[in-house]
Image 1 (cartoon, rainbow, N blue to C red):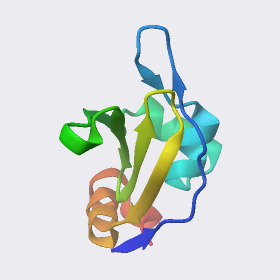
Image 2: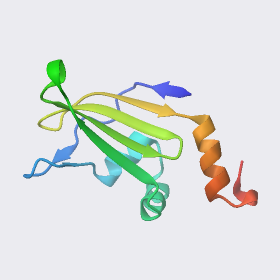
Image 3: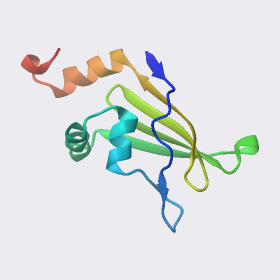
Amino acid sequence: MLTLTKRRVARVERDVGGDFSVPAATMSSALRLPPAELKNRLNRGEVKSQVEVGQGEHLGTFRLTLRCGGRCWTATVSADGTVIDEVFSFDRERLANWRRRHLEPSQRR
């Protein structure tokens, strides 16, 4: 598994209801996917997200996770949407499994 911690995202949006929203350009950068590829994967329902609310000493923060194939972006975010830290990981085995399920044999690398 490859893990990168270099910051790429400074903020995510939060609406008046308190829900987080990650714009497509931000999602593309976070998942290291070209915009057209991200759009295709979003349309196929392959991008999954999760929000966890901080408890105890992490109260007031949130963990946002985006997953797509073997790619995973996790960020700790403050209540105002400021990204405190983020980690991108790339699981080669998970990506290989995704390719076997979704690509024709001639498209696999």
